[in-house]
Amino acid sequence: MASRILVTGALGQIGTELVDALRKRHGVDAIIASDVREIEDHPVMSSGPFHLLSVLDEDEMRRLVVDNQIGTIYHLAAILSATGEANPELCEKVNVGGTKVVLECAREHNLRVFAPSSIAVYGPDCPSIAPQVTPLNPTTVYGETKVVGEQLAVYYWMNHGVDVRGLRYPGLISYKAPAGGGTTDYAVEIFHAALEDGEYTCFVREDTRLPMMYMDDAIRATLDLMDAPADSLGDARGGYNIAGCSFIAGELVTSIQRHLPDFTCTFEPDIRQTYADSWPDEIEDDVARREWQWSPAFDLDAMVDAMFAGLGANLD
Ligand code: NAD
Ligand code: SER
Image 1 (tube, rainbow, N blue to C red):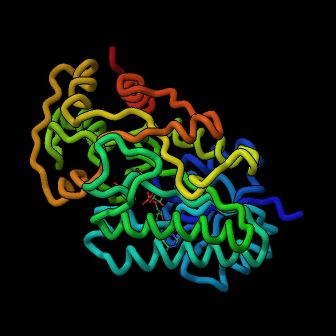
Image 2 (image 1 turned 120 degrees about the vertical axis):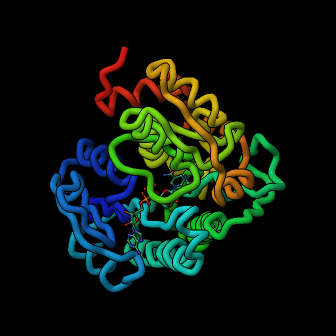
């Protein structure tokens, strides 16, 4: 029976931790990691099977699926918001085109799929606390590709019976891999700058509030969603809202200063402020809580403590 797992975009911020979690759960050889690039000494490449794969290469994807008896794809390959707005054609090609390739392959070979969405599906007309169901009018190309991704997921589920599931991840904060070119990257970069330089220049305003989440919560949500019985999932299956912790950039600085009182942050907003301003402050995750018992474990201070511990900081 085809029971192995293929992870696309596995060398990125999420893949670095998801591959590790999946290998611990299912065994090293059961998880085939892939990415369009190679990174020397990357733990995902050195800890188990790895293949170079562009998600736009339909034939190679099919070959990998058949040769490795793949039963599930975790599809993480994408271009994130800041990189995507700088190169909208590439963003659309990879995010929409790659998702179509994965879903077609899933239809042909009866695969299960995890395909993440984002808080970027929302636009400026959304309430500041975003409900699961509301008009989705993003003003970024990245956000548009994520809306299309959710629609494709629901289409393939309804019309072809493909078991596709997705989460609208908030901005993810982690220490094992760099953030991959998004608007929420400041909430990752700030920790490295605080430890290395004692100061950081933040590219969004001090009062910018966004939904965020510590990576441990995101990985647990991913695995829990994929474990949930299919009949417990409703119309949100293409992109469940999951809330972690929401904070303004200034509150992040204050929380960091609990450990590093001399740390300073200045605020010099750039174009990424526009993208941040178009997204909600918080998200409502009542549907995920009800349908598959989602609940986050990390608030702002717990996340900051875990980041410093993970970075090996010797702090009081
Ligand atoms: P990332 O940028 O860190 O990693 C993406 C990976 O995809 C990279 O390793 C890159 O090399 C790879 N990639 C790019 N083009 C490819 C192609 N053509 N074929 C194969 N691989 C390709 O991103 P991430 O943070 O790990 O995000 C993974 C998914 O989660 C994406 O769909 C993203 O939109 C979503 N997401 C992430 C966040 C976050 O804060 N990290 C938040 C919301 C949603
Ligand atoms: N963290 C992601 C970004 O900023 C949101 O999807 O692009």
